[in-house]
Image 1 (spheres, rainbow, N blue to C red):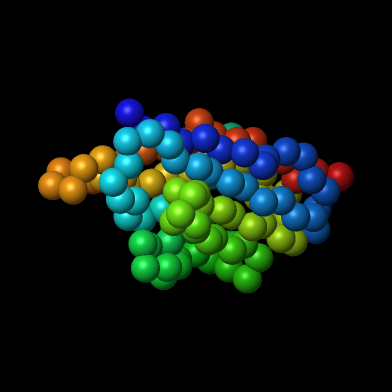
Image 2: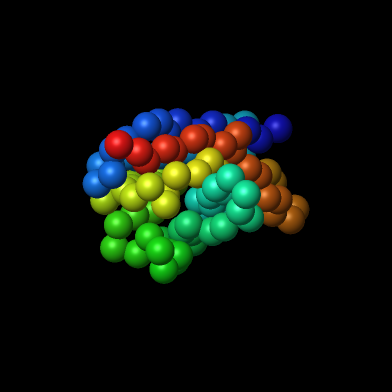
Length: 121
């Protein structure tokens, strides 16, 4: 069984920074893509950033230049460094990973429990 555990959310003032972490544990053979999504009240869940197993990254236009996604494969962990935060960044942030639990099986999608990020003065 695979579990994703998130940490690092909280309350921050506009212009501040936060770093989210998400660690996968359990029976893991290989982790392919990793990503961060967010969902604000009354809105659909949206992609914030993702990163391939090779390290290629992709960002939503709204966070480009402010957020940085990275991964530590040895620790099965993905990070989201968020700088210059704005009130519009307020949302529940979810990590997501595509994980293979054995060599010759399909990868499956796993989600973290969600972590509240609130940007307010």
